[in-house]
Length: 194
Image (cartoon, rainbow, N blue to C red; front, top):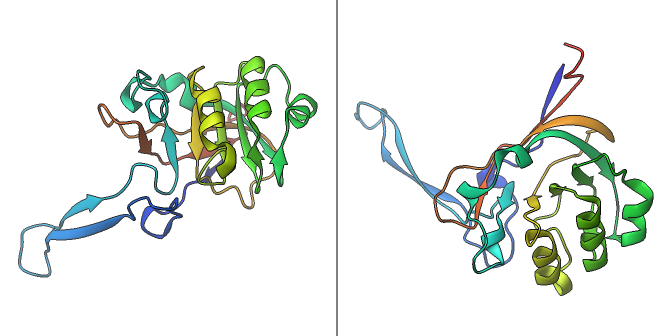
């Protein structure tokens, strides 16, 4: 069994334009004579590797602690795509049995591709980009996916991960009432043979 960490390191990770960059403050330090180390953290919940909940774009959408964990954990397929991902690409490359798909490379969805993913019953879409769609269609793509409660997993690191089938664990932090959360995403292969 191999375990692959497909998450960005938070403080060196990518930041979507205008989001608050992550930072921390050491509140206590053993080196300074304190009994322990203690750190405060400040960041946007959409920094580095993170999950978007429906509340990110839907006024009455589920917040991150309401997202079903069964959507974030389970079999997933890694598929390489570069450039614009169309509905036709989805029809050609995905099978109806797939429920979680991670797009490796620079691929971004069109609104039509997002609609096609919903038709297939996809429950999680992951991307290496900090957003699942291009900036022109950002809201439309998120709205299409989130209205069906598709988990959007953004900011993955899939370099060196071969295309194929894996077991995904990408549970978000349990932040009550918030529209997204960071997560530590991992892939496991050969999980059925050991």
